[in-house]
Image 1: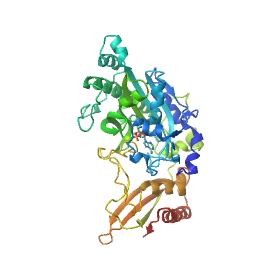
Image 2: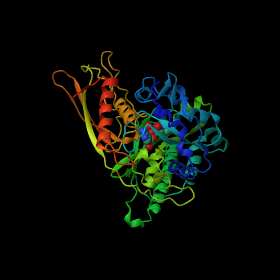
Image 3: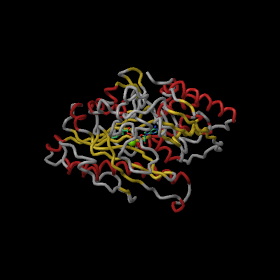
Image 4: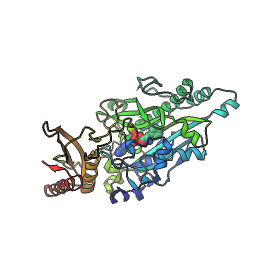
Length: 447
Ligand code: FA5
Ligand code: MG
């Protein structure tokens, strides 16, 4: 069990179901772009490691399974780290050609304006039946292309420089033809582009400014990797001067469908961050706001009225403090995971690589004598000490002593409340407590 009470307290909140909450409004707006897809919004967040990992083909040594990344309740039970945990069961139920699953998910993760340890995802999937196509005397690709035509067209230029299939980086599955995958990919991409463009247009009309004054929408598809799709892609949106990853997606691994007793079905799936989309829709600047009970936040959203851009109540001053420490002992050749087991196939200049499920290369297992250090443990301690008073934690310096081989890290903690001005005394106290806990829990030596 590595799940703190602050995380357990988030479980009953069910923000995506709260009337007039921005996540509810965002969810409903997205759902409206997927007519005929069966929506599941009430699936229980505690799942087995089989559901969260094994059913999706995660290798046994995948970093996503680590206690540094996932909240465990016991050895075989976790807080779901993604809505994909329900893929196998939902495919098995076989109730509809398309489905959507919106739910709270939990991860030990970075701390910044677009990352929170409890957040919400929406999963979507659409499959077609090979046997049905054969009965109709048509090819599967033909049927899918006809469905592609039913998705609203748009004229936004989308950056998509890579081929749909790439033999090494983004391979075709053995049982699929290139023709089928081109059709499924077109259906997936056009569906999701339509969704993002709908959100963007709603956001644009929400500001009340004429078209010419707002920035044009910039979106791009990048290659990705997931154990449960191939080929795979992520969709990124240009947001506040950076590429923001909003979703991962791909062609569903056929073994998942086979194991779910629907071997004739072929299709796509995606998983998006609901907060990320809501931030685009309302211009919400910080992910912590979604959890706020402050009426200055909540009163700004209504399901009945038109969408209106969020007006920040005054921005309170930030205060940053650094903490530097030596890692416990001499670094051995095996090294441990080090800071941020991030995926290696991300393009540069993305706000964040949301890699908990997509990391390809597991880090070398730490040698038994090497103390294990993972950045997420620093994040977790910062959350525990500061709650929502910490805005951002980032590594600002890292070096290895040339003689001793000891490693030193320096993290910058940015303190800011969303609701009031913090006093110096208060931040000093928080920072002092943070320093103490780093020593106590991680055995580091402060510098
Ligand atoms: C996944 O979770 C995959 N299950 C998505 C998927 C589904 C791929 C189906 C293929 C098929 P990823 O770890 O990248 O992928 O997370 C998906 C999205 O969740 C991200 O793009 C991002 O929008 C959001 N997200 C990830 N981590 C956080 C976080 N800590 N806080 C807020 N949003 C996050
Ligand atoms: Mg990702």
